[in-house]
Amino acid sequence: MKLIADTHTHSIACDHAYSTITENAKVASEKGIFAIAVTEHCPAMPDSPHIWHFECLGALPRKIHDVVILRGAEVNLLDFEGNLDLPEHILKKLEWVIVSAHGCCIKAGTIEQNNNAWLNVAKNPYVDVIGHCGLLDLPIDYEKVIPEFGKAGKLVEINVGSLYRGGQVYENNVKIAQLCAKHNVRVVVNSDSHYCGNLGNFEIALKLLSDINFPEELVINADVKRFTDYLVSRHGDIFGFGNLT
Image: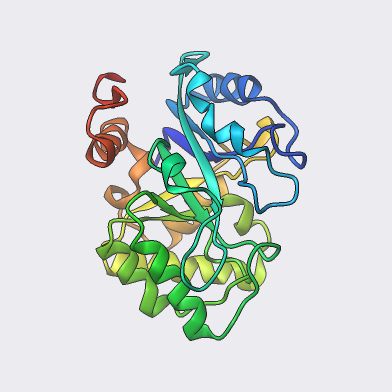
């Protein structure tokens, strides 16, 4: 399986990332990647860019180094009601929205409370991706929530950065992937790169998916047409996604 997009990337707009957007795009071009998403951490993260970063993403060209650039964000889950740290008027303008739970932004409750947090996120029409939910920050009942993500049309992320942590986090991702296959839930495989050299390094995730015979047709970023069709289905053609290929 060859992946054609990396839709979870960070740049020096966040203090704990180390490359520019242009450097990320250059590496993506060298690796034959069709598209990347610019998905900086949002304001509840201590070293995130100012909210104006997300207001002004339209300044980015559609392509850099001939790589399609999606204007997005990695939004923080704040509470069990599913509240997020970007306002609706910004979320509705973004082209790729990941929601993630980070321990600095939300403290874990009971499994039921944690489940409800994610189930509420799944109701949000502006959310594309459930980010790295295999981490230990907000433990959930995968048997309960994964099917609901699918019913809500959300993509579940297989996050390379998480997989390298190994142990329980890796095993959580195996279970997530198995449940996505069982319930026909689409996934997206992302590097979560914080340095350009790591962008597009999908090998550990592809091995996981191969080991469990995961159906390729459920991987949204394994085919250009599948990927662009998803973008059009989410946004219509207001961003010109139907003409990207």
